[in-house]
Length: 257
Image 1 (tube, rainbow, N blue to C red):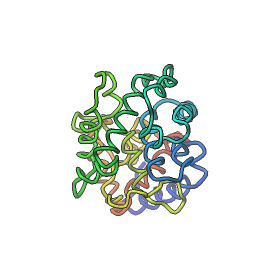
Image 2 (image 1 turned 180 degrees about the vertical axis):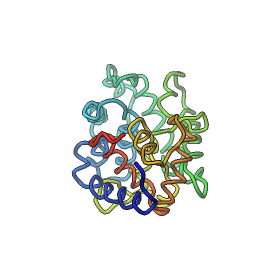
Image 3 (image 1 turned 90 degrees about the horizontal axis):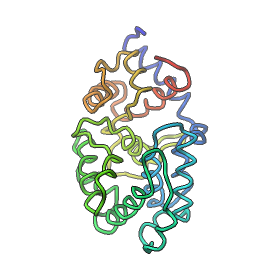
């Protein structure tokens, strides 16, 4: 698809307006943190829902709601005040390769994060750079897994420094940092600028960006994320990840590839 810069921007801005609407919420895992109003509940429910966001969206949403049920639909209170006996009811939970063992580690790690690290937001604020949150994802993983855990559980948080596109955490960061007029993204993390966010990159968005000439790299990895950052920031330096809605809609709903 051959478009000049202005045509491309107009086209993608149109698609953002088309898909960045309240109706997006009911079909997306972002509906899980929308169940809550307290900041810590939004953060924890969003983090857990994003963590298991691979596969069919209907299954992701179903599994995420199950997670919230197991946390008594009060995720922050459960994380901070649970007893060992309360973890027994989590036995048997599974979403693809994320199982009850992983879930329990995440509960303990989240408690440690909020009790000793100032919470999820504080880690990102501490380790972000002037133009990227990707280094902070590396430090989040390092600090998150400072609690005892089996090695298998580590795969459920990606590391850009190991080459990962870190799609799910970048999506979570979009939810927390970006504030939109449609009310999809929360914008509750005020001390991180949306301008330094990276777009969640997966097969669908990768195919779309390559067809549009926004991405040349063939792999959907951390280097591709860096390349896409540069090009999306040319289109909108203040809010580059709004284009996630356009790329998602074009890829998933319109089969644009």
